[in-house]
Image 1 (cartoon, chains in turn orange, red):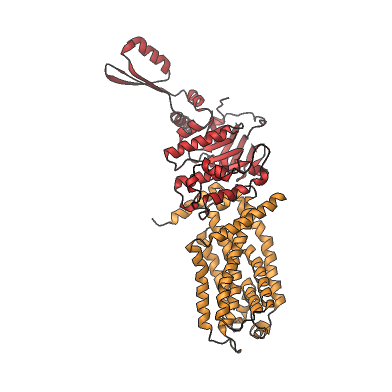
Image 2: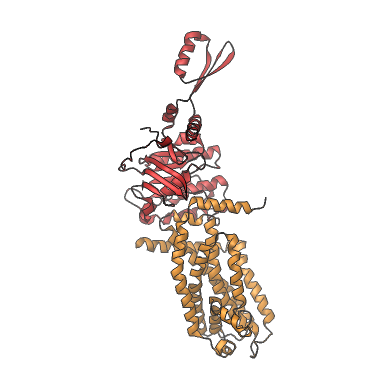
Length: 283
Length: 310
């Protein structure tokens, strides 16, 4: 038991160190800033358009949606990406060769991935508050925002871990990115979902991205804006229900898949992946 | 102590377990589909012993080591690593092992000292009365010769420095048993010598070491005992000296007489030299007798074995 507690403590330390490292190189800094800059520019163009049927800026409506998207998107992709890359480069095998190393590694990755999502949220939200008018920024809003961030991460990160365990190489990440991007497209992030055909609305409502977007809108927009949502309501219960269902499914599945992945790690597995990766480098 | 085992279909009675051995491998078998990769590997290692596992590519060295490390399940046989079956090894067992992995580009953003400090902290709970875990990080950095690079990022180290970091990671928990897979690949001669000194120091501290290498000179320098693995079984097991005597390979005698150089290969070098002096006495100069090197022995053994297999 005490070993598990220490692995938890070491894992937290690992997450902190690796999160700090993301501030010390241009590649990571750029990957924080680039998406933020893109969405802010896009929202600025939408600032003067009105939400159909309501006297409210489309840019201000999109800001919370984009934050909701980045929670689910980051939760799914960050952890998956890290697991795939670090399985290929041998980081996971090192963890396996160390007592409680896999547990410490995993906790570290969860801390790091969640931290990266939070940084992304703050980077978008802080300038957004100054650029876009009409948001509801009372104490209740902030508490709801914290709640939906937490729930969104718990719903998506185990899923990200499953994806990361199943994908063979970093070059195959595109296979998952495409459907995730597609889901973003139909989840009412950049335009109200009510303008989509109902069968697409149905599909979108099966995935967490729509619900994290709805959750952040419910947190940050005035109550009157609920009229543009499906059923003219923020549907709090449904939001919690669907995200909790994804969380439960992910938390049941992730340990099984992660264990299977860890069991298969060996020096020759890493060597074979390295061989394969190096063959792709053009000479 | 020297045995030739496993080769040419000789049937051995299964021996009983060796008490207190660091490694005890009996009749280890591994089959992938219908291919037998290991066909009854059998050896032991005492505490503090350094074993070199040699063999042609594809002989089963990596498979053997991965089974012992607990990274791979075996098909059959009895294996004890520090007294425990690696297929059932827990974290306490894991803490007593060290594995030096071939690195590629992992932990590239970590600084050397920071990484060793972090990985060492996993071993703190497994410190015992006799073995203080982990290794003090600065002492360890000095030991592997990375002091000037302690604040460098792992990604910016040269190939040789990176290998030293791999070794440091492998020993940070002060292992009782250390697995070294091709430890000096990419080392320059002086780094290689320093590494050899480190291995001697570790084995003086009672660390058991199992290493694989393609450098036969290195195996001869480091190992107390050499195992040659060919086609899934151990075809030779003994010190470099014992192996060369076993193979009765020819020695090369060189001398000069009347300003002329002579070379002669013989199985009985001592007798030949004696007769040479009886015949020519003082006329003989620049006498040199070169016994078969481990490389000669190894080549002869593997060749003989492969001929026997066909």
